[in-house]
Image (tube, rainbow, N blue to C red; front, side, top):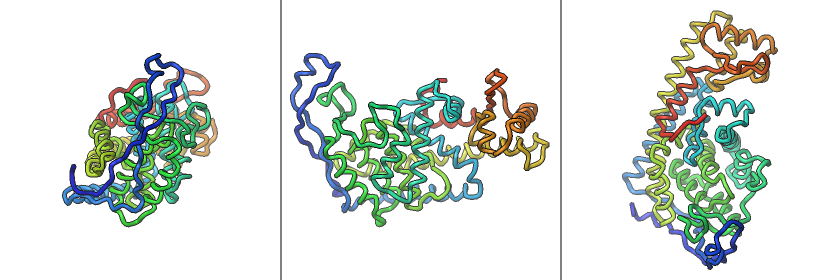
Length: 393
């Protein structure tokens, strides 16, 4: 283990096996299994080795500096970076889609499931940032509800689980990890909230440990990883390490997800060093790639302004300013977001299309859609650097 952190390992308890439909006869006859007992951490001191503490401090400085760099240009880049974080967090759960498919899903297209789920994760991230001044159990439930909504009867959004869950395997007997029984979820979350409420722990270490504890509790039937990574950003914002943007930490984790999962396993064995190092190192990678993305979009926007001759307060320029954060648009979006008429939106898109900035791709006379290929290419390039396994659709 990395250092003497005096951090407790999880314990185990025997749990009765309740078979469910679809299992083989052999699996139905299995006996008791072991589920985790999660130690209370509210009053514990998460001590790190000197080298890891220095790494975490350096990463925290870089996060704050990157956040400060964006201070004067929040409008386009806050949304872009939040979307990339949402997509990368989803990709860790093997949910991938192209930037175009995600943008269409944000406009209401539900034809591609992965993109729809990633768009939902963006809503969960937005909820995390919006509620970051209130880090409590209600906030966690609202983040999960933003992710799942009310449409899925199997996994109701915003409700603690009432059944057993396990990670890997067909049954808890063959699982890689079995979280605590559902009856322990609420007390464990209450303890976690008390830990998050403290102000005497360095913020990035605080968020990393809270995240690992949340994933160990696994309080929901599904969506724990995405909700837990959104919780990280709620803590970074709520504790003041970030003020303007969402640093795409998940994009850094995605470059080596096995190391991230190994760090969670080490945490459950009583070693907090790997998860702290994982978040610090991921922050460096995320910031480097994030800077490249921001600079590329800045260059694209600068070229756009040279091409459009309309007045700066025109509908065309207003759409232009929004293209970086929403690289696929329809007239309804432009009307709603820019407060312009349908005819003004159509004229603006025609002007931007003539300038080679957007492309109409729906092929319809009504409900037409336009895309910015330059921004979409930049976003997919960022995804490739983050190590996404594929970008269908």
